[in-house]
Structures are given as C-alpha cells and as structure tokens.
Image 1 (cartoon, helix red, strand yellow):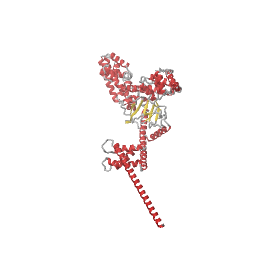
Image 2: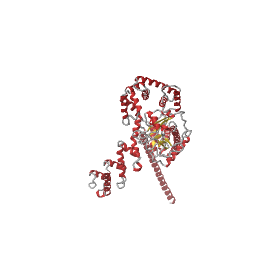
Image 3: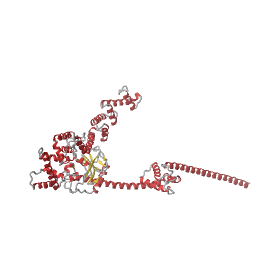
Image 4: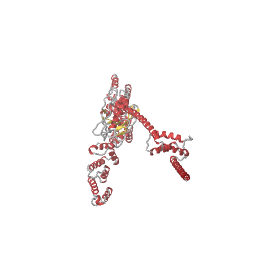
Length: 615
C-alpha cells in the first residue's frame, strides 16, 4: 500500500511538472513571437520612416540623395535635438556619414543604401550612441569656435592697425604747415618730428565706426570718428543757408575759392587727389576717408549717437583694441614736397615764396619800361607750377598777348584793361577780344548769372571770375554758360542740399535733452514722413511733449498714439487731452455701461462726435 501510494504520488508529481514545463515553454514561445512581431513592427516602422525621410531628403526628386540633401536632413535632426553646432563641424560630420552611406561609391545614396544607413544614423543621434556622438561633435565645435575666435581677433587687430595708420596719416596731413591753413581744422594733438601718434583712446565712445575713419563737420559738433570712438575737432563748414554767423578761414576761402567750392572737404570729394580723398556719407555732414597716400581705405558704418555712451564692458574692449592697434601701427612717412598742399589738391594753389623772389630777381636784372606787379608774378608761378623758368616764359608770352590785344583794340582799351580781361579769360586772346568788343552786353550777362547763384538754381556759388570765364567761352550765350557752371557745381550742390535737408533733423535732435523728445532716428522718420517740413515736425513734437507731460492722468498713452491724435485733431492740444480724459473716465466706470474695452470706448466716442455723455 505504501509503495502503491508512493508510486501514485510520483506519477502525479511528474505529470504536474510536465504540465508546468509545457506551460513555461509555451509562454517563452509566445514571448519570443511577440518580441519578433514587435521587432518586425519596429523595423517596418523604421523602414516606413526611412522611406518618408528618403522622400523628404530627395528634394530634387532624382531618386537619390546627394551630399547636400543629406546635410539638410542631418541639420534638421540636430536642430530638433536642440544641438547647435558650427557649420564647419556639421559639414565634416555630413561628409563622414555620406561616405559611409554611399556603399557603391557612385556619389549618391540610393533608396536601399539610405534605408540601411538611416537606422544607423538614428541610433547615433537618438539611440544608444547619442551621448558619445554628440560629445565628440561638441568637442569639435569647441575647437572650431576657438580657432575662429583666434582668426577673428587677428583680423580685427589687422583692421584696427590699418585704421590707426590711416588716422595718423590723416592727422599728419591736416597739420602739415602748408595744408593746415587751408584745411582749417583745429586738432587737439601735439605733432613732433615723426608726426602725430595718438596716445589715449578717444574719450567720446558713443559715436564710432565699424571700419575706417570719418570726419564729421556738422555745425552741432565736429569730430574725427574712429573704430574706437571720436576725437573732438573744430571746423566751420559754411555755405549759403548753413551755419549762419560762421565764416570760412581766410586761407581756405582764398585758396579754394579758385576751385569751384566752399570747403576743403568738398574739394577732396571731387578732385582725384593722390594723397587724400573723401566721400560724403548720406544724411549728414560726414566725410569718410576713401584713400590716403594712394592706398584705398575700407569704409564701414557709423554707429551710435552723440550723448548715448556704451556700456562699461564695451568701453574696455574698445580701449584694449585701441592699445593693441597703437602698439602694432607704424608711423607714416610724409611725401617730400616743399608745399604739400599743391600735391594734396592736385594743382598749384600756393606759390613758393623762394621761387617768387627768384622770379622777381630775373626782372630786376632786366631793364624794362613796365615791370610786372607782385600779383602778376604770383599768377605766372601758379600757372607754371612754381617753375621759375616756365613762369618767366609764360610772362613773356603774356606780354606779347597783351600787346596784340591792345593793337587789335586800336586804342579803345588801355593796356591794364587788356591785361585784366586776359587774366580772367585765362589768356585766351580770342575770348578776351570778344569781351572787350561786347563789354556792356557781356557784363550784363555776368550780372544776370550772378543773381541766379544758389542751391535752388543748381548753379552753386561760382566767383565773378569763374562766371566771366564761362560767359566768355560761351561767347555771351547765357544758357550755355549756365549749363557749364551747373556741371562744374553738380557734385558740391548735391552735397550741400543733402546736408541742408538733414540739418533740420540735427537741429531738432539737439533739443532732445531739454524737451524730452525721442531720439534722432524717430525725428528723422517724422521728417521723412512729413516731407522734411521742419516747422510742422517741430510743432508736432512740441504739442506731443506737452500732452505726454500729463501722461499718467491721461492713461499713459504711447508717444506714437499721442502723435497720431495730435495730427487727427489738427494740433488742438485741448481736444486731445479732453478725448484721452473721456476714455479714462468711461473706462474707470466701465462696469456701469457693460464693461466695454478701450477700443469700444474709442469707437463710441468717435461715433458720437467725441461727446462723453452721449458715448
């Protein structure tokens, strides 16, 4: 019985164990099946996504993915992951991935190659290899960024050094003994035998350039603008309608008056000077150096506004850049010219006094009935470019020309009169004879043209001698003479009109501090919007400032809102204030009238002719 019971227990236990084993195997097989199905689904989903990405990457639809198309795809994936890398690092990574994906090396990725590669790519950027791959890319990015920063610093130092050398060349030219009286620009620098080398960085750092040197000669503040700030200078830019009360320096007026201009800086914008050239910048009386000592100079933008200083960190950075540029820059060498102003302007405008004495000595040795005056010898040297022998020869020819003209006039004109006419006719005997034969009509034409001088006519401001010459050349044809003068003055007139147009903006901007007006940019936008009508904009700004002074009681409206209302209410300040007070009153009691918005309140006020009670 005991054996029988033991046998039965053993048999039952075996069956139970067998059933449990079978159950375990079934569960494992089911789990394996489910895992295989999940993997198959995952692979199918990856293949579907790969197919979608392939279609997305194949922008040009040529049934293949190029390197550029793969780069776009990888950049999109990195952006989605929030990874920002330098483009050079991304390009290098794309090149590596493309080489791996292009199994047959045919220069493009087919559909099968893309599907096989995409799984690897996803695993690298989003799967188990993500941290390792991204860490490597970030290390490369840091190295590339450091190298770019080093290169940028070197390029910045090189650019600053060139600009510092340009600044020294400009200063040494403006302070040269023959140039300084004509340039008439007072500089706060000390010049030694080697020239001028600024020691301190500019104190005024609110206005600076991105590149190059700019001279600002506007009437509200003159400065030399550099990449590190501005140096204050003194200069009077004067022409009709601009800077009233100021006068040109005598040397500038006398020397440049013969060059169809009113300013040293205007001249150097027009003439092709071998030593220094300027280009007027738009909107203001600012002149950028474009060439110095025959070398082209880069011209950047002018940043900032006067009176708006930069932050402390930027100020230190500018000072460091200045110190580095000063240490690296070399002192310029001036051209060896006895009268540098002549080389600067490209023509002889100042006579060498030593040569003038030599020419006078030549005539002192010769016994002549009529000895030339000092002015006559001076003119001869100007025409001969300070060459004594050439001046002597020219004077002899001029004497013969005077004799011929006196003979042609047959006693109707004195020798002095013939010489005066020949002088302003630039020794053209035919023109001088025409003038003397038609003197009354000629002078009437000259006077008529002189009365038309100015910016509105486009004639500019030619001297009487210049007008006489053009009338003589045109043989008293007034229209032809005017056309010639207009062509000569075209550049200067354009510059003067531009300066005058924006001078009103500068004038209004100067009142900003005392009247709490907006910045220059806003004023300039208003001027442009209102056709540069200074009086209109001045009234608009004044009325707006009056209303904004009570801004808190009026609901703190914005400047743009108040300016619009001032124009809508035709500059009636009381109506504008009453309108804003009505809005505030109704809004304060809005619950009594259905809680309208401000826009609805304004609508009903406008609908009922701004009657608060009716609204």
